[in-house]
Image (cartoon, rainbow, N blue to C red; front, side, top):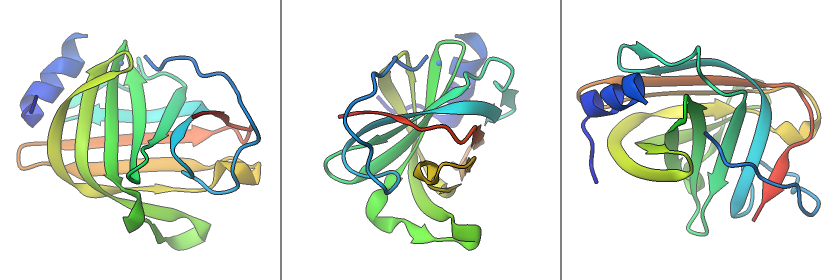
Length: 164
């Protein structure tokens, strides 16, 4: 199912929740790391879809999903809906201040833990390594031909939860 950016904005303005993930074996030292799901706790500072600001309902958890093929998605949630910023993990490059940058190709949408819509975009997510034990930021911006998307999340520096 392909959605236009205005449809994504309408989706967010009318109805995002991460599933709870149990902690498992020792976390890897790199981020986003091996295939699986990593849940970060902290503060959702910004979530905007087109002109709709979903920050007020944004949950203070963020999921990083890495698929076996290397695709990485950072998933923000607000009011039971999900917005994922997705790119090819093989394209991750070093950025300033010890951060890394993931080039984006899609923004995905869904309800709960089912991602069903997608919009082709250009953009990036910049992020630090939460395994370092200090607060980091994950900041994503993307634009489609019709709209723009932005998400910003700051961790509290606590250990992350991982599920394969």
